Length: 124
View (cartoon, rainbow, N blue to C red):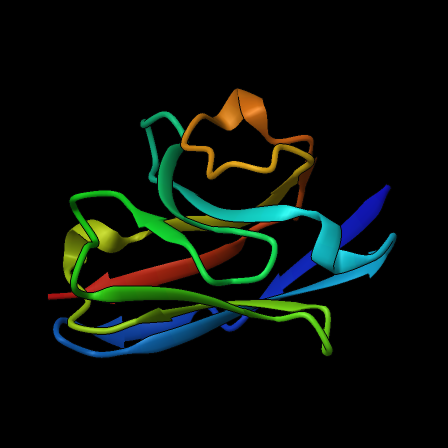
Protein backbone atom coordinates (compact mmCIF):
# COMPACT_ATOMS: atom_id res chain seq x y z
CA UNK A 1 0.00 0.00 0.00
CA UNK A 2 1.13 3.55 -0.71
CA UNK A 3 -0.05 6.92 0.62
CA UNK A 4 -0.03 9.94 -1.69
CA UNK A 5 -0.03 13.63 -0.78
CA UNK A 6 -0.24 16.36 -3.42
CA UNK A 7 0.90 19.96 -3.07
CA UNK A 8 1.71 22.96 -5.23
CA UNK A 9 -1.73 24.05 -6.32
CA UNK A 10 -2.88 27.64 -6.18
CA UNK A 11 -4.22 30.63 -8.09
CA UNK A 12 -2.40 31.67 -11.26
CA UNK A 13 -3.18 33.97 -14.18
CA UNK A 14 -3.94 32.85 -17.70
CA UNK A 15 -0.61 31.90 -19.33
CA UNK A 16 1.14 31.26 -16.02
CA UNK A 17 2.87 28.17 -14.68
CA UNK A 18 2.64 25.89 -11.66
CA UNK A 19 4.44 22.74 -10.57
CA UNK A 20 2.51 20.13 -8.66
CA UNK A 21 4.21 17.57 -6.45
CA UNK A 22 2.98 14.25 -5.10
CA UNK A 23 4.97 12.63 -2.29
CA UNK A 24 4.53 8.91 -1.73
CA UNK A 25 5.05 6.97 1.46
CA UNK A 26 4.60 3.34 2.37
CA UNK A 27 5.63 0.78 -0.20
CA UNK A 28 8.47 1.35 -2.65
CA UNK A 29 7.46 4.19 -4.95
CA UNK A 30 9.33 2.86 -7.97
CA UNK A 31 7.12 -0.20 -8.33
CA UNK A 32 4.11 1.92 -9.30
CA UNK A 33 3.08 3.38 -12.60
CA UNK A 34 1.86 6.88 -11.74
CA UNK A 35 -0.71 9.25 -13.14
CA UNK A 36 -2.26 12.69 -12.77
CA UNK A 37 -5.99 13.24 -13.11
CA UNK A 38 -8.16 16.31 -12.67
CA UNK A 39 -11.77 17.09 -11.89
CA UNK A 40 -13.50 20.37 -12.61
CA UNK A 41 -16.80 21.28 -10.92
CA UNK A 42 -19.67 19.36 -12.48
CA UNK A 43 -17.34 17.20 -14.55
CA UNK A 44 -16.06 13.66 -14.27
CA UNK A 45 -12.47 13.08 -13.23
CA UNK A 46 -10.30 12.98 -16.35
CA UNK A 47 -6.88 11.70 -17.27
CA UNK A 48 -4.08 14.25 -17.57
CA UNK A 49 -0.77 12.35 -17.76
CA UNK A 50 0.96 9.12 -16.80
CA UNK A 51 4.53 7.94 -16.39
CA UNK A 52 6.12 4.52 -16.23
CA UNK A 53 7.92 3.09 -13.22
CA UNK A 54 11.28 4.37 -14.38
CA UNK A 55 9.93 7.61 -15.81
CA UNK A 56 11.23 6.77 -19.27
CA UNK A 57 7.76 6.55 -20.82
CA UNK A 58 4.99 9.13 -20.59
CA UNK A 59 1.50 9.74 -21.95
CA UNK A 60 -0.64 12.86 -22.06
CA UNK A 61 -4.20 13.90 -22.71
CA UNK A 62 -4.49 15.83 -25.96
CA UNK A 63 -5.72 18.88 -24.06
CA UNK A 64 -2.41 19.27 -22.18
CA UNK A 65 0.11 17.87 -24.64
CA UNK A 66 2.94 20.32 -25.23
CA UNK A 67 2.05 22.38 -22.14
CA UNK A 68 2.32 19.90 -19.24
CA UNK A 69 5.23 17.62 -18.33
CA UNK A 70 5.02 14.67 -15.97
CA UNK A 71 8.17 13.43 -14.26
CA UNK A 72 9.23 11.48 -11.21
CA UNK A 73 12.20 11.24 -8.86
CA UNK A 74 12.22 7.73 -7.41
CA UNK A 75 15.02 8.61 -5.01
CA UNK A 76 12.74 11.26 -3.48
CA UNK A 77 9.51 9.23 -3.79
CA UNK A 78 8.01 12.17 -5.64
CA UNK A 79 5.89 12.65 -8.75
CA UNK A 80 5.72 16.03 -10.50
CA UNK A 81 3.49 17.81 -12.97
CA UNK A 82 4.96 20.94 -14.54
CA UNK A 83 2.14 22.98 -16.00
CA UNK A 84 2.96 25.82 -18.40
CA UNK A 85 0.78 28.11 -20.52
CA UNK A 86 -2.12 27.51 -18.17
CA UNK A 87 -5.63 28.29 -19.36
CA UNK A 88 -8.85 28.95 -17.42
CA UNK A 89 -10.14 25.57 -18.61
CA UNK A 90 -7.30 23.90 -16.68
CA UNK A 91 -9.03 24.95 -13.44
CA UNK A 92 -9.72 21.79 -11.44
CA UNK A 93 -8.72 19.70 -8.47
CA UNK A 94 -5.65 17.71 -9.49
CA UNK A 95 -5.06 14.21 -8.15
CA UNK A 96 -2.09 11.90 -8.32
CA UNK A 97 -2.70 8.18 -8.48
CA UNK A 98 -0.73 4.93 -8.40
CA UNK A 99 -1.32 1.62 -10.12
CA UNK A 100 0.36 -1.77 -10.16
CA UNK A 101 -0.11 -2.03 -13.91
CA UNK A 102 3.22 -2.01 -15.72
CA UNK A 103 1.85 -0.26 -18.80
CA UNK A 104 0.70 3.37 -18.90
CA UNK A 105 -2.97 3.66 -17.96
CA UNK A 106 -5.50 6.36 -18.87
CA UNK A 107 -8.58 5.06 -17.08
CA UNK A 108 -9.44 6.11 -13.53
CA UNK A 109 -10.59 2.59 -12.71
CA UNK A 110 -7.10 1.22 -13.40
CA UNK A 111 -5.61 3.13 -10.47
CA UNK A 112 -5.75 1.81 -6.94
CA UNK A 113 -4.25 4.54 -4.76
CA UNK A 114 -5.22 8.22 -4.79
CA UNK A 115 -4.15 11.41 -3.10
CA UNK A 116 -6.57 13.93 -1.62
CA UNK A 117 -6.13 16.43 -4.45
CA UNK A 118 -4.83 19.97 -4.80
CA UNK A 119 -6.81 22.89 -6.24
CA UNK A 120 -5.55 24.71 -9.33
CA UNK A 121 -7.37 27.87 -10.35
CA UNK A 122 -6.47 29.79 -13.51
CA UNK A 123 -7.94 33.27 -13.77
CA UNK A 124 -8.62 34.98 -17.08
